[in-house]
Image (cartoon, rainbow, N blue to C red; front, side):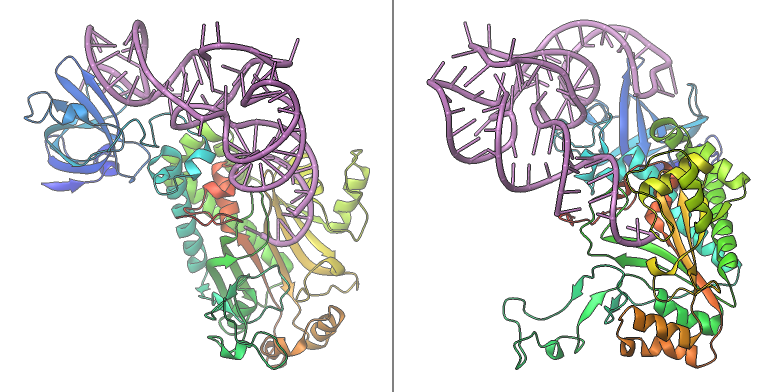
Length: 466
RNA sequence: UCCCCAGUAGCUCAGUCGGUUAGAGCGGUGGACUGUUAAUCCAUGUGUCGUUGGUUCGAAUCCAACCUGGGGAGCCA
């Protein structure tokens, strides 16, 4: 007698007549006067629940089975039978129903079998995994993560676990969370009255990382093809549907590669992982298309079928200037594109993901490789309709003199970058990489509109419960 | 952080141009019916109307501040 998971039962892995035990949580119970009850049990192995048919001849039928409500946990022993009803091929003819855990008060169990708002479910981050939508998101998220690793592994990339704690606050890529073991109510001070970080755990100021890029570049300049996939932290006071204080990022970094190589890699990767979702999570995607976003599947199919549109920043500016639309923020060569501009390009002008390349150097980071025109850098953004920037990347400046010049121009402390500069002093090579916000990808794929609903326990300003 | 909107039963919301007893659907519960499947039908309970303060004879309805949530912006992934 085997412990069976719902996915395998529904897929017909067991022969009719096999006796199995299925364990999970009750989604719904329906009683029939024919002397049977139907109990839908889900265990997370797939979108659908399995139906158990429970006859009223079981000793605990009236005392327990008929009292089962949504959320109760059960272990049901029975035989696999072909279903007499519509909606499923196989079901379980129960011979024994063991109630593992009751729901204290069905009236106040937060996950009632009905529509709930995403905002409401967010208040129950510990119970929402039992809902259709959170379960589907979780499986799609897993599928995407596995596909990302598989994609890079198949192409000879190595996964680098870059550090989560960093002592470099100089990248200037946003506010950092401080990491300290000092007693905040009694801080040690130096002679000058400043906090004496020499007495802190690392002997200097430490923070949570905002990016693994600089660290992973060192490995690209040794193992050629590498990537990071880990958590990232930004202490920005961002209150939007596409920002989190703690999120996961994928950052490939490739030696001997240029910007066009990165654009191609980004396109290949996105198509690869989206294909995996369509193939492996058809059940969940069908749900998203039904209930969350009717274009969820067709959008992905179209993305896979079409080449990404490439566009130079300079050309994008011309398009925006001549499109006849008036924007809240005026468009001029040299300005950073606003959300409204990016939305227009991705959603209206192209209607699909678009890769913007070669931005003015003055609005981009110090490490981006300068183009020969002296005005732009080899940077790219992949803009997805509805989400905005999903990928940001660049070729890295591998020429030490040019890198140093940028550090000086941007008044960054050169000594903080000694080890980073070493990569240019010892056997430097052209290299490039990009960063993909994992939650933004999950949101794009599922059609979920708020990034807080595609990560198990969202952290954002004023919210780190659970 | 800025702008806009909202906060009324377990949930989703309607309502009140300030005035005696605040509504619907869903969920829950009880029943009817049924190899059912977001079933269907009947019955049924529930609310210090976000918090604090103010205006008023009287506030859930008006005003203010605050809190929480949503949409948008900035920052970015």
